[in-house]
Image (cartoon, rainbow, N blue to C red; front, side, top):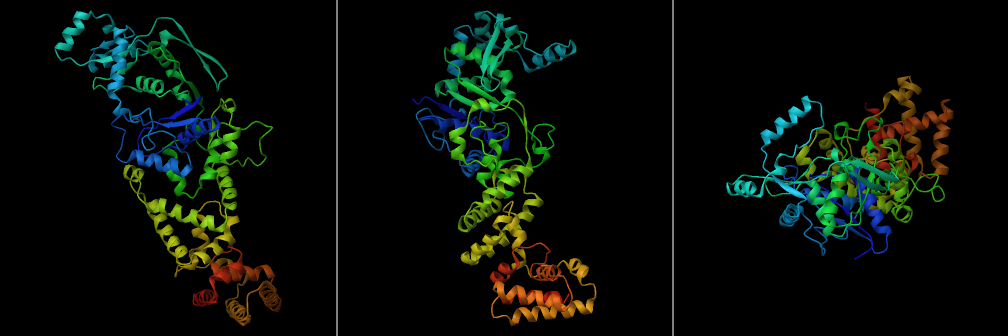
Length: 514
C-alpha cells in the first residue's frame, strides 16, 4: 500500500461544478506530489434520484479534459473495488448491523409521519431538530416482534451524551471541537437497504485505505459523526481537508448555476483551455509560498504538483474572477504553437457540437444552438486547408482571450453577407462622392502592386492618403473596414495576404455596392 491514497467521490449527476473541479484538482496534486501516491475515483450513486444515465461518462469527460486522471476507479479498475457505491450495498449492511450488535447503533421503526410531527414540535419549541431516541430503548423481544411483522426500519448511530469531540483540521490549522449532545443520531442505513452518505463514506474510505481527501467546508458539521463512526469501526480516520467556498464574481454567495452555467463543460464550450482553468482554479483559495511564487501567477500543472502545500489553503472563501480567468486563458493560448492551437480549436469544436448529458438535463439552449452554428462554420473553414488555417491563427493568437474569439476574427472570410462598419468610414469620409473616388483609387493602388510586401504596400496607402490630405491612420482604418468589416481586425496586411486578392477584390465590390 502506498503512503498516500487520496480519493475523489463525485455523484453521477451529469456534470462537474467548476468549484468541485478545484477540489478534485487539490486531490490530484496531493496524490501526484507523494511518492507512489494514488488517486482513487469512487462514484457515490446511492442517491438514485440524482443519478442520471451517462453521468459517469460525463464526469470522466470533464476530468479528462482537465487532465485530472485517477489511478483507480470504475474505468481504471483496482484491487479495492467495486468503485460504485450501489455495488457495495451488502458491505454497508454488514457494517451497520455489526454496529447494532456491538451496541453502537440501533434499529429505528419510527414512521415518516412521526418524524415530521416531531420536527414540527421541536420547531415550535424553538429547539434544535433532532431524533428523540424513542427506539433506542426498545427491548430485543420488541425489535424481533416488529421485524417478524414486516415493519420497515432504519439503522441509527448512537451518540454519547455531552462528550467533547475534537478534530485537528489542517486548513484551519488547529483543533476544532464539538459537543456530542449537538450531534443528531444519524440514520446510517435507510429502510431500502442503501446507506446514507455518512456510513458509506466512512466504510469506503476505511476499506479503500484512503489517507486523505479534500472536500468543501460545508462538510465540517459532519466531522463529529464521522469521528464516532471511525471509533465504532476501530479504524483510523483519514485526513480530511476542508476548502472554503468559491464565491460568485460579485463576492456574494456561493458560485451557483443560478448565476450562469458553471459546469466544467460550460467553461470548455466558452473557449477556455485546460492549462488556464487549472492555473485559475488552483489560485481560488490557495497560493504558493512567497519564495516560490511567480509575479505573473502563471503556473503549469508540474509547478503545482511540486509546490502545492495544503497548509496554504486559505480559510476564507475566494471570488470567481472571470477577468482573471480570461487573462490567464490569453496567456496560455499565446504559449501554444499555431499547430497546437489548430488542434485545440478542433477539439473544442467537437465538445461544442456534440450533445452531452448536461444538455439532456438542462435542454439545448438558444445560446448553445447559436454557438453551434458559428462553430460549425468555423470548423468547416479551418479544416479545408490546415496550412492556411494555421497561418491565420498565428496572426491573431496573441489577441485571443477565448477560442470563441477566433470566429469573430475570421467569420468575414466565409460569410457572404458579412457587413461593414459604414459609420466609421463615414466619420472620416463624410462626402459620399469623394468617398467613392477614394475607395476606387485605394483598390486600384493595391491591385497594381506586384505583391503586398510591407515595403510596397504601406507606402502606396500612405501616398494615397497624402494625395487626398487624409491622416494615414484614417485611410488604413477605411481599408480595414472594407476588408474585414470592422475598425479592429487582425494585422491587416497579413490578413489580406492570407485571404487572397480575389477575396479582397470581392470585399471592395460589396462595399461599393452598398
